[in-house]
Picture (cartoon, each protein chain N blue to C red):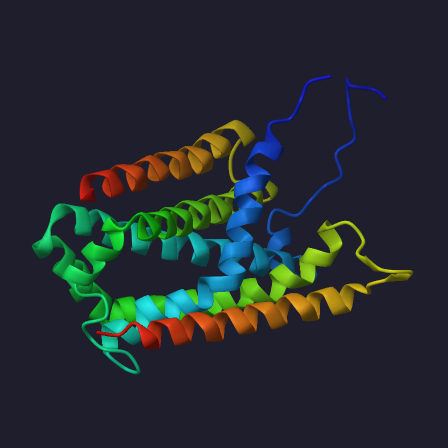
Amino acid sequence: MKRSIAPLFWLPFGAGGMLAALIGPALVLITGLMAPTGIGLSPEYMSFARARAFAHHPLGKLILFGVIALFLWHGTERIYLTLRDMHAAGKLALMWLCYGAAGALTIVTLAALAVIG
Amino acid sequence: MSSARPYLRPVESLWWAHPPYLAYTLREATGVAVAGYALVLLAGLISLAAGKGAYEAWLGFLKTPWSLALHVLFLIGMIAHVWTWFQIMPKTMPRLALGERILPQRQITAGGLAVAAASFVIIFLIAKGTQP
């Protein structure tokens, strides 16, 4: 029997989905709305020095990598399955497009974290 | 089963834009918000690695009306994701039993939503408490 590789993608999909369900709304509100406008939070909340210190710390690195990579894998799995159901393109082309993008961006995330050191 | 001429039921190409499939399409569309938000964070991380000037340009982008509108859409998508995620959860997990009683799906959904709400409050308080 030919084995499907789909289950390999269900793990990051599920992990990313659970993480987004638990912390997604709060993160969007804090980093995308409150900190940039200074409403309810100091406008210096995401200043260069603070962001750099956060990304420098091993725990900060783990949080940044976990959130960015798992959110990407979760989102691209949904986009892949929906485009496939819409017959937007062939299955293999969509797999390369969606999983390829998620994989490449995961490597970029690791590289950026490594550069910050 | 004949593999020569399998019957293919005709499917309208825009099936996903009409009920009842529209609910499925909207639920799956929350993935665009989740991945889109990750892209914004990744852009910030890359600019953070590039240096102070690049990072402050990214912070400047976050202050634009475009970015704020985008994040309002992300927030709506995320909240829809939370809501639908815990509706799906009891359907995808093994049945949960407390002693003899099998926990109804509705209670698992309610429990998940309660944990998500508590998590929201905790992260909000951490953000408040770690302000400079």
